[in-house]
Image 1 (tube, rainbow, N blue to C red):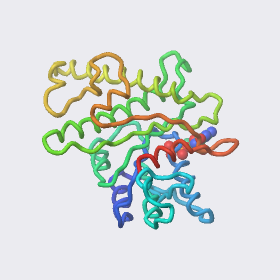
Image 2: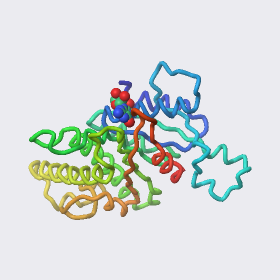
Image 3: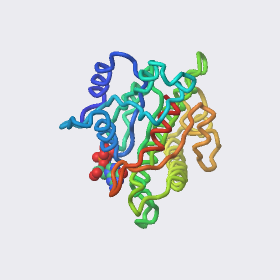
Image 4: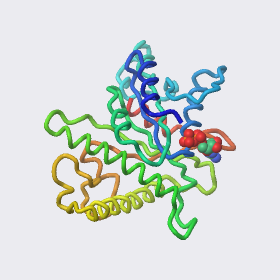
Amino acid sequence: TIPLFLHLLIYRSTTSTTLPSFLLVGPSGAGKTALLTLFERGQHAETRTSQVPLSVEVSLPVSTKAVSSKYRSVNDPSNQAHKKFLLADTPGHGKLRHHAFDSVIKPQNLKGIIFMVDAADMSMGTSGAGNEPLHQAAEYLHDILLLLQKRSTRSKTSKAPRELPVLIAANKLDLFTALPPPLVKTALESEISNVRSSRATGLLDSGIGMNDLDIGEEKEWLGNGGDGKFEFSQMDEVNIAVSVAGGNVLGADESDVKQWWDWIAGNL
Ligand code: GDP
């Protein structure tokens, strides 16, 4: 995989105007490349990409209307311009490179983050010792949300950052073994609870007291819900709206990415 900084360079250099952009992240195998390819093909039906696109310029399907153009007339030419957005892929490794990611969330016109998971890989009980793909995904998502939370709490002094929505795209719903989106949500929430408490235990073992965790801007505890169960709704307080929607990029029949389009349109 290409290092993230290089990726960012490419991303920056190809972005002459600041189109609204969405970041696509998630564990490897989730279907990110497949989604980018689908979006890319949708744009240029004839061109075949030999290389995996890092960042594609996408236009909303005509049937989907961006929230920002809600009050514009259908004939308004600026409708066209506003429907475009960039979708940038990141290498899907389990461990997050914090600094790299930190610069990823800086682009001015970042409208949201799409975290894609393989819903067919999330079910519990496939092995006795928990579910490794679920754990990996939860760990990755935990780190991203914590980073976004820190970004929000850090800027308390100046202006609070505008809200940044996160979509958990439960992919591969065409597969029989796929968990329905509401269960993907609860599975991730409870696994993130585990990640959160094992991180805290790690910090305690290293001599940092529980009370220290809350001190200062670098709060290491995700969410505001105490040490009970983690829920995505706890992110609302730091202006991060997390939603979950299902779909499939590939499949025996057609792809179904309608709900993701709708989410993108609603945040564009
Ligand atoms: P990435 O690592 O996140 O970029 O994942 P890829 O896009 O490479 O996809 C990983 C694998 O999942 C590939 O073999 C894809 O063909 C497959 N895949 C992606 N999306 C779907 C889907 O919606 N349904 C099914 N059945 N397979 C999918």
